[in-house]
Amino acid sequence: MPSGDQKAIVKKDTLPPVTLLSDGSYGYVVRYRIISEDQNRYSQWSPIREITGIDIDPVDGDVVISGSVIQIAWDDDNTGRDYDVFIKFDIDASFVYHGTTSIHTYSLLAKSGASTVEVAIQISSSDKEYASSLIIWDTDAPEDLVSLS
Image (cartoon, rainbow, N blue to C red):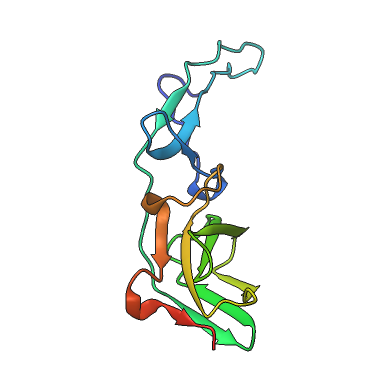
């Protein structure tokens, strides 16, 4: 029968999307309670805690245009996470959330009237807002701007 201190480990691939914390950074909001070994007694819930310091590993990626289909692919250094995809066509004022994926590819149709597209892939967050601190890959340099023609 185990006694003394014990650890509970939460694996990265079971974590929910990150959320915006009170200090403006991204992380997780957690609380816990302790259950007796015979599972007959439960503690009160712990105070809510904010955990920062999530790992954001930059990766390589590419955008390929085939007719009006835009295909995006990136490396899988951040396995076990979901990704939010943000798109900015030259006719848009800023990046717009397009979708979330659990795989390392994403496809969409080009917007009518647009001549270029920019892409940002970030670790999935609960608020689906563009956040430069969560980006793992993007077409941020002028030479990365992808022409749709």
